[in-house]
Image (cartoon, rainbow, N blue to C red; front, side, top):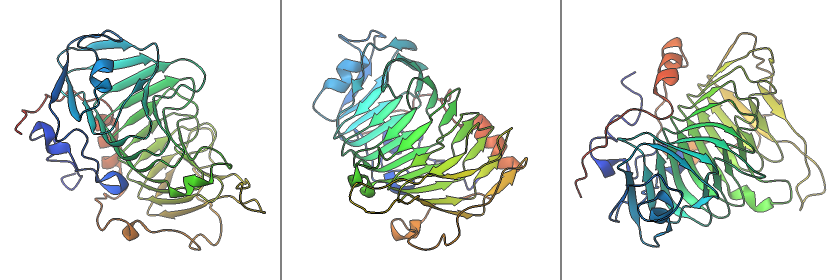
Length: 327
């Protein structure tokens, strides 16, 4: 699997900046800011993650402690921040991270689990956030979504993440009234959706490029295209459990349109295992974007048993050392 991307991102601490593939490729996080070491697992106060995220200046947040941070409310992650969990094992519980009008954010090598409360997501990206990269994070068991990208947020890449024990996994595009979500662009690749029920992802309005993901044992559908969504699915592995419907199409009416419609999906090079259904809408090429309109290159493997194995082992939080910081 030598051609998989990201082989060099851990050579130094900040070499990850700007190295995402896809729509989030310009995310540099806190590249030009000082190190913010988290020294406390407290929800707030000196040395806490919340305090580090609260700083208005750019910053590269690292952890000098491992363990669980029990959050009583969302942590707001402002612009030009990197939350870098390499070198420690840090789990966020209770609530999650919120990116609100945030730009240039990288979240890497974290665990998010057990978020409780109405509208509580693992990572909530809204409104009008952009240039976001979520990499090597593990997600499970939130009361709402694991990652939600809505309200005009765009240019996001989600890579090498692990999702499990959850219902409504990932929502892209808020609802039919938020027509500004036509601006959304998201890349999801090298992720493992392990028995999550639905929304891997569900998309309204936006353009989404899926490639080299492994989705298995869903309970409703794998991927859903709602109103005006455009989903380009390339070289993914869809392995059904009891439910065989891979692609779903929900018809809705955009607030500024007279007629209802669903979205469209183009499937290219995907493999469908254990009876996963391949049927998709006719006329899929009409009005479908192509990723090459937005970025010139991306790195893909053929969907294979080898890729399945790699994604089962190498997604989510990883016990990698923190690289040395050479500014």
